[in-house]
Amino acid sequence: MAISKQVLITLSLMFLITSSAVFSRDLPTTVSETAFKLQPQLIERIQSTLESTGYNVTLTVLPTERALVEAQLGRYAMALYRQETAFRENPNMIKINPQVTIKNLVRVVSKDNPVLCELEASSLTQYRVAGVNGIRFFESYIYPLFKTRYVASSLENVLQMVGSNRIDMTYWTNVGLKRQSKELLDHVILCPKHFITLSFHSFLHPDYQWAQEAIEKAYRDEFGKD
Image (cartoon, rainbow, N blue to C red):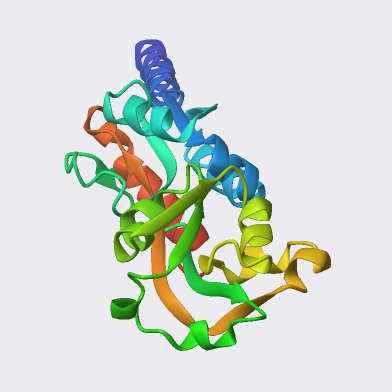
């Protein structure tokens, strides 16, 4: 009887040690400076969701393109917040489902030119557009439609350019635009029709595929009903 009890204790300890080793595995993650600045609450929510898996989650904030490259090289397990097209050149990156958010982009024009809201995408070539440095959806979806493109350091600068008619239009989310100052918004129009809908996902490097099942379960619990 004493031997059986000793064996039971040994097995229990081995199980606890093994479980601890599994659930304390490191999961280093990265996110772009732009996303961290513009979506702090969402990034915190993603990080909290990952921590619920029991893995040792760390977060490093990097410049946009560096965050992309470092994730592709496997120096980080995950890129937390990227468009679906971000890893088009590296299809081995594992897209985590469900998405962490969906964004509807709207066109923004000067109050002096409300007619620009009615333009179809095929008619935009002759107009001037501006985007924000580091925001990838401009390169993926917006800039290819225009011949004349400008890049500014912030959304505030872009809105000033639109409001003063230095450019014809830009694109952003309704939610993000409504956070801007009344002074900026007084000189522009947020066109009523959605221009494009974008899905944003986390992406996992193949070296960390062992974490995919637990991560996707946590994401379904947290983001599946959004």
